[in-house]
Amino acid sequence: GQKEGDPAYMFEKLFTVAVNHNEDIYVLDYQAKHIKMFNSEGSYIKTIGGPGQGPGEFEVPRRMTWSERDGLVIGDLNRVSYFDRDGHFLKSTPMRGMGIFDDVDNKGNIFITDILMEEGFYEIKKFDPEFNFICNLGKSPLQRTVQTGRRNPFFTLIRYDIINGDEIVTGYAEEGYVLNLYDAAGNLVRKIGKDYTPLEISQEDFEEWTADDPPERKYKYYIPKHFPPFRTLQADDEGRIWVYTWEKTQDRTQTYFDVFDKEGIFIAKIPLKSRPQVIKNNKIYTIEEDEEGFQYVKRYSIEWNVKTGTE
Image (tube, rainbow, N blue to C red):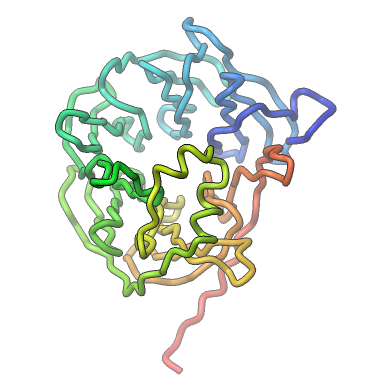
């Protein structure tokens, strides 16, 4: 990304990033309604799609993921669209009224978040590639205003990711620092917990978190005493689970991630500037902004120093 110059490297509003097995990088520009493809060195290759309702076009592209089985998969307003590695359109599957597309596993099964307004819940649902229902994988309540009519800006939802190809890890911070690992059939296999000391929310925290909100919205918020145990979670391609906490470094420029191995054992506490979009091949891909608000895709390498023994 860059502020000016070649339009191929300029972005309007980035939403997410996907990376294939060759480390080609796909960048979803929500505002431009297209995807830009770059090679592993960051050189522009092509632009995929564009605004519209036709085959290979996008109305409200929200989610994007890379699947070794299905290629590039994009969740749009009322459908899921599939493209091959080179960005050629393959097909679309309608999903009107079924919820928000999130991800696909290595068998092509589709995961959505369904917002059940009348019941007052968000719910994670799993479907096969033809959108036949398989199972539910957890839910969390919608936010309701307190008696004063104010809302909690730190309100949490159930979070999840696909791990080890077709398993699922979920966590709902209101239930504490507990992660749930499910097999492909939706059976609970393991619970992963971590001791947690609640962090108090300061006025500085509140102002920083709501910095982009207009004053009239801030007036409708209230400040809880403590942060939730974590913000969200995600899995890397080797089955490690990265938990995005609220704990910051002393200079407040980075936030800590707790990392667990595929067996659920805590192995590292890592500070990062931004939440990873993809963690693959020991590389982290992020979307970051400079002081003027210009967005960039950045890639970092990971080096693991594993200590063993009982000294």
